[in-house]
Image (tube, rainbow, N blue to C red; front, side, top):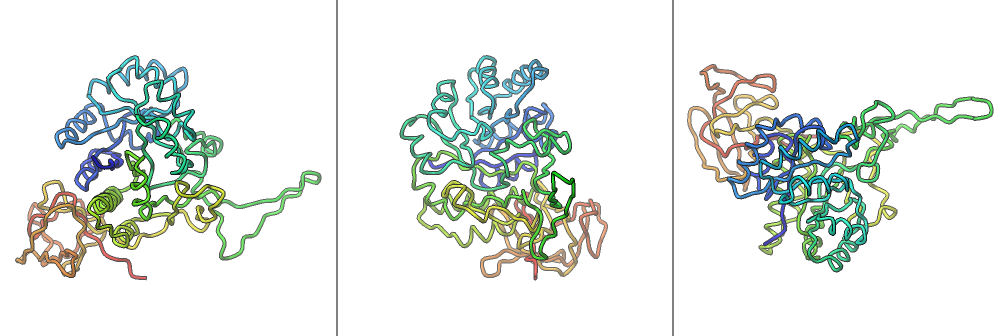
Amino acid sequence: MGVELLSPAGNFEKLKIALSYGADAVYGGVSHFSLRIRSGKEFTYESFKEAIDYTHSLGKKLYVTINGFPFNSQLKLLEKHIESVAKMNPDAFIVAAPGVIKLAKKIAPDVPIHLSTQANVLNYLDAEIYHEMGVKRIVAAREVSLNDLKEFKKKLPELEIEVFIHGSMCFAYSGRCLISAVQSGRVPNRGSCANDCRFAYTLYAKNEESGTLFRIEQAADEGTYIFNAKDLNLISHVEEILNSGVIDALKIEGRTKSPYYTAASANAYRKAIDGYYAGKFDLAFYQKELESIKNRGFSEGYLVQRPHERNNTQNIDSTLLEGTHQVYGEVNESGLSFKAKDRVDVGGVYEILSHGKIDACDNEAGRIWEEEGIWKISFNELKSVSGKLFEAVHSGNTNDILLPCPLPPFSFFRKKIEN
C-alpha cells in the first residue's frame, strides 16, 4: 500500500471535496478540544457522525482532532467528549497531551491514537515514550528533518510517521505560541488563535534611562509583517520523501481554508503521489496547480533543511498573496448547477478544475469543451433552477445556476489572473 494522503475537513462540504479530489483520509473535530475552534463549530455531534459514516462508505478514513491542551476545569467535559466521539467509530484520535492520551486509552481503548504535531516530537527517544504509551502514529514536528525521521523508523519500525507537506506555517515552535494570548486573550493552544503573527507591526526603540521612544521607519520596499511565515509547499520533494521509505502519511494543513484550497491541494498531491508510483512525475504541473491557490508565498520549511539554514521562510511584505487564479464558481453536489464565487457573465470563458470525467456539450444554455488539455465552460444564458434569467451572477447571488450539462460535483470554475 502506498503513502496515505490526508486532507483537512473543516466542515462537511470540505470533507466531501477532499475525498472527491483524492484524499485517502480526512481530519476534523467537534468542540473546543480541537485546535481549530472556528472549524470545529462547523460540525455538530450529529453531523460529525454522519460525516464519519459518509467517509467510511467510500472506504476512506476520518481522524478526530482532540489536540488542544485542556485545563482542570475542562477535564470532565473532555471525558464526555471522548465517550461521545468514540461511539461514532472514528479511525483515530489526534491527541497532543500525554494526559489526554491516557484518558483516551482508558475510555476508548480500541480507537488508535495519533500524536499531534503540537507534541513537538523531535527525537526518537520522545517518540519511543509515546509509542510505549500506545501511540500508533506520530505527526512529526514541522521542525524535524527527514534524516531524523529515518532514524525514528530505524529505532521504531512499527511506529507510523506522518508529515505536513503543505499549508500554513507557525512562527513559533509548531504552534507553541503566546502572542495571541498576550494581545487579545485568545489562547492558541486551546484552539482560539487570532493569528496575530499575520499582522503588520510598527517597530520602536526605547532608551531605558531617559524613557525616550523612537519610531523606527521602514524602507519603502521592506514590510513589517515580521512574524508572518510563508506557507509550506513540499511538492518538489515528494519524490525524495517517498523514496525514503519511512513516511506513512502526507498531511495538508487547512481546516479554515476555502473549499477551492481543499480541492486544489488534494488534487495536486493526489496526482503527485500517483505520478510517483506510476513513474510519471510531472512536477511543473503539480506546482502550477498549487500556485493557483491564495498563499503567503511558499517555503520548503524544515523537513529537508535545518531552520538555521533557511533565510526565506518569512513574508514581511504582506499577509496574503494572490494565487495565479481567481475562483468564479463552485458546482453543487448534484452536479447540475453551480453557485457564483465571483462575477460570472454570459459569454465569459472559464477553466474547469474537476476530479472526474467531463463530457463535452454544446446547447442553448452554453458549452463545455476541451482545449489543449484544459476543460472550459461558457454560458449562453444564466438561468437559475427556479427559471429566472440573469446577464451576470456574482458571489452575493445565492441562486443555483443551471449548467449546460452535468459536471462532477464540487468542480470549480476559475480564470488566470492577468497582471
